[in-house]
Length: 243
Ligand code: ADP
Ligand code: MG
Image (cartoon, rainbow, N blue to C red; front, top):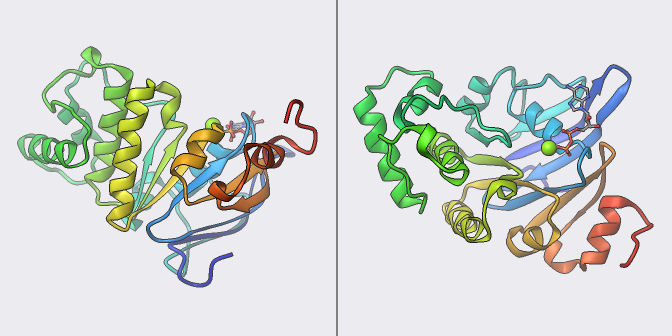
């Protein structure tokens, strides 16, 4: 575990759905400027955990500390105010509207659409996320739609950006571009919480990994120091056929 220098620190965070524990006493620390993987099979509890961190789901029990202080994150708006941005697995965009209009709808403050378009264009250039703010979402590929979500998060200047299985909708080329963007965020001192079940990309881009299985933490490691076999064992248990 990290000392008090953690940006985000979570203790015994638990989410029950009825009597089923989707997240069971999870401990997690995220340092400033690290790309931290949340690794686990389908159903391990990854999305449930980050929904609690972004104020979408209310924890059943446990504590969240942000920059050393206990916080209750009651809504996505509160998460954004703290400095947490989120790129969901399933986007919530209005097809008939433009990129800039979609971003405007998600902002708490009223900002002229022209200014939003300008800032979105500047951010998309700066972070290697090609995007025309005036295009209609209906005309965009899934990779471009994801870029809207990333730009939208960056507009709020987050200290932590959470991405839930971002590469599941990307081509390998698009994934490589995304990784460059994540390295840039890291170089700026921002933290990234990167959710994936893909070992090889976690080993390639992440500084640390927290592994979940059946809602529990089964390992915390530097993924580059692990073998694919040792990571797979943390993910699926001691019986890993073929490893
Ligand atoms: P992951 O993102 O790691 O694939 P999830 O966090 O989505 O896993 O889900 C963890 C477990 O919690 C799964 O068994 C899932 O079916 C269950 N679950 C998730 N959301 C709900 C919900 N709203 N109600 C009941 N069960 C849920
Ligand atoms: Mg998920």
